[in-house]
Image (tube, rainbow, N blue to C red):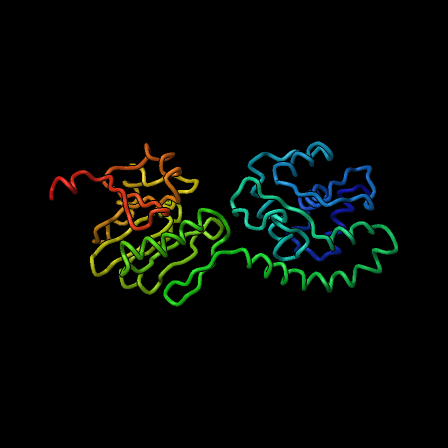
Length: 309
């Protein structure tokens, strides 16, 4: 039996979901333990490996070539299930606070998996497998609790929402806490996105009152706030890696929310002046800039506002 078939046999005995009992998943396992065709299972080792490097290993050692755009398939159709449903891999074991969408995200097998895989093909495998399968159910639960400690949480309208780790979502929390406090304390939160869970929060009851339907995350800004007293709609981009409210975004957002007859306030939020300077050329006129390190001030890209005083 070759290594791909052996890896597939291991996955089947681990009771992974049927959709992950395939060659791609078997190759992913081999890359995770850095096992070549002529190696023995007793020589497997734990590696911290990115999806790109995983695909390079598979190409070099098993002559299976996957296009670069297959990385998402590896993540969503193999690794996520290995992590969340089966508990045989860890994400970012070297840095649990690494952002979800970081290109440096690493994957590795758990220590328990490494120990039992070393016994594959021996008498020890058959002895240890039943105990391992009982333990792995607890591992999934404990791992989720462990990862949860590194998540970011905030309470909105008596509802706790949890963000995935990363500077972008830290900035969003700053906006919700500090920007609102200084500039729109009466504003209600309509929508909040997240790097991992795109539509993290929707204020369904308020949207229903406004007769407004929100579906397309790709068009939406990172946060949408509504001040019904002052008739203002705040459309906020949290800029840590992606761009600010540019001319293109200004037009898109104006059109998307055209049915809502509120004054639209466009805000580009930055964590600090260094990030602001990087994007200043792209910021549209008739918009606002808020910098988290000076939370009680704003920069107005709007000359007419002062000429009319």
